[in-house]
Image (cartoon, rainbow, N blue to C red; front, top):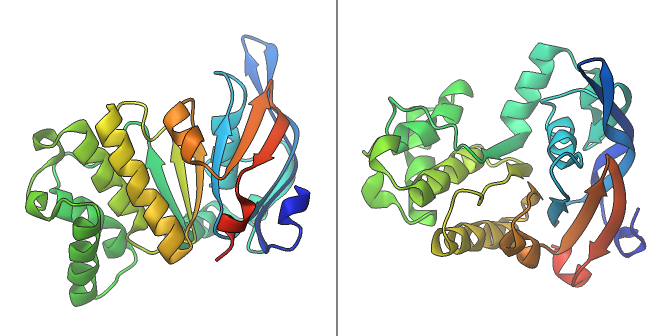
Length: 242
């Protein structure tokens, strides 16, 4: 653990992760004995060249992939040992995902895309309406509630994707290259929103990114190369505490 985080509550503990893929019978070591500890309320960027393992690591933390060896603990729960149905339920309740490709449902409106996660959780209709309205206001798209994804710009779609990720008030938000398809203004707006939620609501954000705009905003930058952590830099660690 980074010494500057010694007195902070560890909420994500990835211990000695190994993940190897076979590419035409040639093994590719996506993760090579990676250790990672994330404290509550951090704003972390995972960076590195293509093939460094950052997206694989993010997928391990989110339970979208499983390691060949060792485990991932989230708030003390071993998600690596969970059965598929249990893991789906855990992700639904505790983890929000933001993807580079947005992954919005094209036949649903912005409002319905945000509400979808709350429907899966079987939340009452009044609660769903209130939460969706709150999130649309937070991302500045209340006037786009009835629009479908094809009627929105890329930046607007990504803001809706962020609102959907936040709908269930997750403990963690995992974002894989969230600004890759956005221009400077849209990326800055999106990062402002996530920075504010991190500060005000204490949500833990972890980004996989090449984008210097994200890396500049991060308060901790972890660099991977060839499936290994080669650097772990904390910036203004006092600001990570809530």
